[in-house]
Image (tube, rainbow, N blue to C red; front, side, top):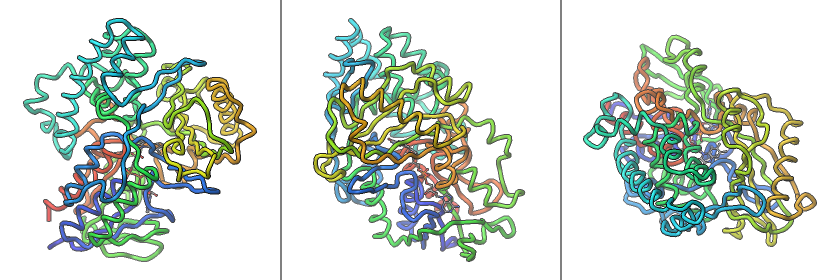
Length: 487
Ligand SMILES: Cc1cc2nc3c(=O)[nH]c(=O)nc-3n(C[C@H](O)[C@H](O)[C@H](O)COP(=O)(O)OP(=O)(O)OC[C@H]3O[C@@H](n4cnc5c(N)ncnc54)[C@H](O)[C@@H]3O)c2cc1C
């Protein structure tokens, strides 16, 4: 076997997935993670008996996780327990004004009909198309490595040009008039990192993931998924190194030679970097980088975020495990993220209360809460701004859910743009990579395989297929297949 020793940079989901596939193929795999904890953006923060998933909290597309474990003749349930949430989540539109999204599709149709007469029938049609897109995209296209535009031309897509020319907003606004229904249908697209008006209609498969497949919870939180994949990787023989910051990718005769980790050189037959793509290229001498600063400056990055990890001294009322606060203008906030980047004038925000489902993630009688405000990448980040926005959302939370909370806050830890840069070498402090717009889809994304350096590969949310935990897991599989094929 030509490429015997493989070094993987980073330990996010994409790197963990790649590590498993490469170890299974017989390579000697070592993973180098700069932080003390494995898991990348999906690390856990623990304080005083409260446990927080620092990044992802929504477990969507369970079939992708099942397929991953099945590739190793294992089952998801061999590594963690899953529960389907019912309702999946709640969306607030104002005081005492909210919609709960049921786990059963027929119930969602009823909720829509109660808000807009005739909308149930339209939603059924919309979801049927979304399901067909899901079957094409997530079950077939997404498993292609993005090497050529021809990958997208299949008998399933060739008659679907309209789905790429029209945006999600075009199709949602055409069929649904009620602003609440429109927001509910545009929400899943936010996971792709771009505005609904810039996201091709084909991505409505996210609506099938939402309403059709549902929202799941891994017992213990998303960290249970990280730990499950690490356990599998160790069973396959992968070795993990933490506090292991890679400072250089060394090249000889246009082929990778080694990485430098904490001033030590580690000889490597092949290298896979799951760190942010832009940072990975900075580890190379200039002449070996594929993309210029101008290229990067023109990319639409997915948003950054301001997060708060809060311990409450009591159980909260009137909220669900996942609760979205869409009581302000979605469009205004989107403009302030993508068009004229600035701190939002009246932000939408999201809250997760996992201790509602899982008693083990908070001390008895208390609540674990994570709040998230999406932000434009690279904004100025100060303690004063963080505090200002904390006050804004706590005031809104109290008012919308009709309870007083401030005196029950035991602690409040914030996380924002500067932390993303510092902790993950994140480009512009993005939270979840590079957006999936029409011109940043598939073969139009940064490549999985270096065009300049032999045996150098990239994986993760800035390459193919895109942001999110399921795509990161798929990205690890795609990069491994390319590497294995070229041996
Ligand atoms: C706040 C937030 C909420 C999210 N919510 C969801 C959600 O609910 N559902 C969902 O599916 N997705 C969600 N996502 C997206 C999802 O978490 C990511 O897409 C996915 O985890 C990215 O995995 P990755 O492997 O691409 O990168 P990362 O997880 O960023 O891994 C890259 C790793 O490389 C390491 N690294 C960087 N530089 C070096 C170096 N020089 N040497 C060694 N190591 C290095 C970093 O420390 C990091 O551990 C969310 C993300 C965030 C941040």
